[in-house]
Amino acid sequence: MTANKPITLHQDRYFSPNPEERKIARRLFQLVKDLPLVCPHGHVDPRLFAENQPFPDPTELLVIPDHYLFRMLYSQGIPMESLGVPRMDGGETEKDRRKIWQTVADHLYLFRATPTGAWLKHELHDVLGITKRFTGATAMEIYDQITETLARPENLPRALFERFNIEALSTTDAPTDTLEFHRQIRESGWNGRILPAFRPDNVTDFMYRNWRGNIDRLTEVSGIDCTNYHGFILALEKQRQFFKSMGATSTDHGVLTPFTVELTENEAARLFDKAIRGQATAEDATMFTGHVIMEMAGMSIEDGLTMQIHPGVFRNHNEVVFEKFGLDKGCDIPMATDYVKNMKPLLNRYGNDTRLNLIVFTIDETTYSRELAPLAGHYPAMKLGPAWWFHDSREGMLRYRQMTTETAGIYNTVGFNDDTRAFPSIPARHDVARRIDCRFLAGLVAEHVIDMDEAEEMIVDLAYNLAKKNYRL
Image (cartoon, rainbow, N blue to C red):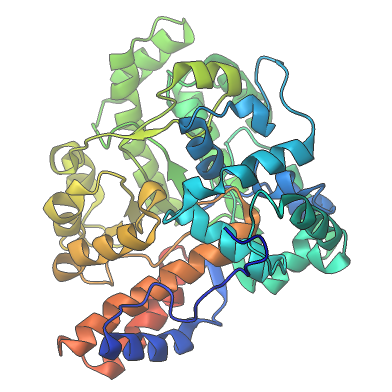
């Protein structure tokens, strides 16, 4: 590969090669390419914006926080320690940032035709101003160029937020969080809209690491004794109100399955007491989480917070990696899910109530056309989250539209969210989503399924309006 070959981002990338469809897609893309970015579901650390310090180096910006990137390298036998990923057990990891950067560059071919490869190319070219292709031969030159770029005031986190044209960005925060960094952002006078989202998994799942310690922490931050079920529910309600006062518009629930069940208060209290005594089983945890999801839906009807559920992920499948590196290190794996039976109690209790806005995500694609689109195409409270995680990709997004639109339409979906920890990848991810939606709609126009004026309205809704509406932004 020629070291001096330039990075190229073709103006028609991701559009159909069919000339008529490509022409329509170009026209549609002009309507949305400069719209503000609405980012209602993600994992960017709010500390970035509270402290607004320069990113220390290219690896800290692009490599270490991005599990999409290092999971691929790990799959090829490259240890995470060699990529500087911090270890939970205090073990040694590579400290030489240039060496880490060179390792990534030497193996960049692994990302050809992957979403990560597309995002990284966009980040380097459009965000960081790199014009040469990133290769093993150009790695150090590009490292030095990015380091210089990151030191400039216009590339501080808040400045990038404004340059990316982000209208609102939601983080993901535990109910035990004091939201101190969100408070610092508010008190700084900066007008960037950074919002918390209420993610209670660490106290609602008995099997969560250090669950009992998290319950004590919830007692501390809420001022309510959470060692009994009644106090636990009161504390969750109080923390939801606190999050809402800090700008939150949504909750987020990463459950193993979409199982829901309505227990009596006494039944729920008995399970909770077993957990407090350290005697809860995995079956107890499933029953209790299924009940708490029902409780959370009721709370959302009362306080107006949009409720997100994303089941179907076997978290931390690689126990060796989990023990060494902790959560969210690229070893979460899709698993088969059943929504029709599992969600029937929830949907029969609350699915007909238009005050509830319930967004369901999946990475089990087989359920889109068989279960999720029909459910969302019927129950007023339910909407479909976008093509997510492993399917946040060119092919995944296109399949998503093909599998859901005829049954649920686009107005029972919620636009796009980037779901990222890697802040500079946000504009790249939205760019892909907008282009793929343009491609999908262009095909419908070319086949005379919809008219051009309808497609022009639909693309603006998909790129911007649906996310704002469904996340109550």
